[in-house]
Amino acid sequence: MYNTLLNKVDRTVISKFVQIKDSLYENDKINVWGLVPGPQNERQWSRFRPGDIVIFVPSKYNLIVTKILAKERNRDLANTLWGEDKNGKTWELIFFVKILNIIKKDKRSFLRELGYSEGDQLIGNRKITDKFFSKYSSIDNFIDQHLEDSISPEYLSDEIATQVVQNVLGRKSNRRKKYLERLKEEALKQNSRDYIEVKGKRIKRKAIFVAYVKERDGYKCRVCNFTFKKKDGENYVEVAHIIPLSEGGLDHPDNMVCLCPNCHKKLDLGDDDVRKEIIDVLKSKGLNPWLQDR
Image 1: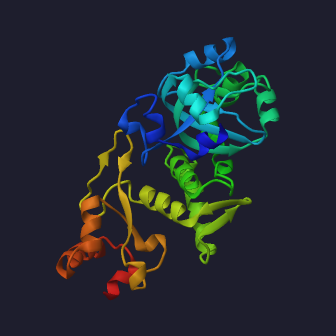
Image 2 (image 1 turned 135 degrees about the horizontal axis):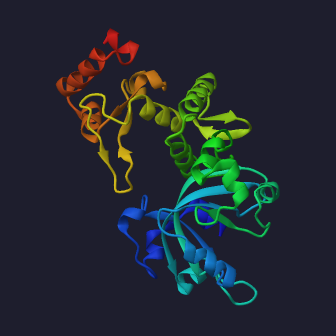
Image 3 (image 1 turned 120 degrees about the vertical axis):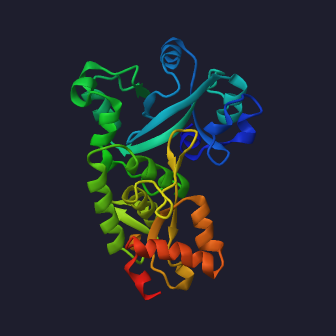
């Protein structure tokens, strides 16, 4: 169960049993969680709708914050993914979700402090206790107040670690820019590593730099100002090295820029005249101090 929530399930497995929108998959995969049917679980499952924010509480020290993309009741899919329990039941009340954040927090103290049963496995907008509401007012505020505890632990895959970093740092939070700046500075200090250590947690340097550059550049192409919204409502832009690493460029935010796919391809694949056109625009905007020597 934990594995399918963190590491995703391939579309080819899911499509044998249920059909969900193509736009919900990311690289043909999606995060999946399920509940065994029973009066309490069925009540919980029925309350939630696509778009709801849900905190899964699957283990002693991790809270996994997700957005529900879809839900389906399907015994055959659940049996394929997770098998059956000792009573012959399976986790057929299925959620398809997007991971927004993974927070390191003691499960027992968290549930006890906020008035939940220690047996609770999920908490969301449709199940907030008075204690939770008085402390955080909403799930969104809970996420924002735990930004500094939110980077995934080192045993997570690169894909999930990058996803969590970018989702967390992309949130509309007053603390985000300050936190992102601090992570960038930490990444620059540890510039000989692919990963950096922050509070004992391992984060990919590239994920930090990409998130920082997108925020700095306002999620728009710095050459033509183009961006567009993806099906999930997020702005799409790519991050490129201005001077390629293969040509001696530095792996540094000052040598990185947001570009639309078209301008990115011009910079990477264009002939000398096309590349010069892109470089001249970036020079005129004062990007990358090392460009002035070119």
